Image (cartoon, rainbow, N blue to C red; front, side, top):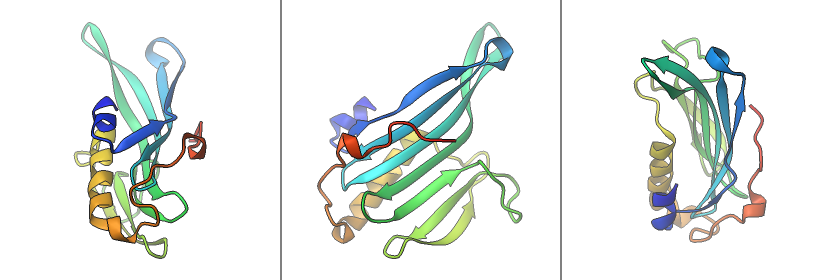
Length: 154
């Protein structure tokens, strides 16, 4: 997050990580929101599993949802794998919206090998902001910390 704050795209966040279970059943939930330039808010919901590979356990994302919207306006796009679409080979997909109306246009299958990391979603949100700067109500402002959800339900 530090690199995104230094670049002045991210201003604040309410991300938290909570642990559940222990040993082989341990997992973490990361949730909250990230405030970005253009009044963009990225809502993050991740389930992180602890995987034992050799001597050192690793933390790997197993479920995720990254929703990119503009405060007081509409959603731009969302990635998730919390549900599967019948016409997709697996549950990894991206929802594309008509930002001017908030209507979902389509769902694109991205596949297990194509799902983005949180950093990649932040970069895509920055690119989206750059391309759509002229249609935003407050294109150079940031959402207030108080406008971000403290905890998001999975």
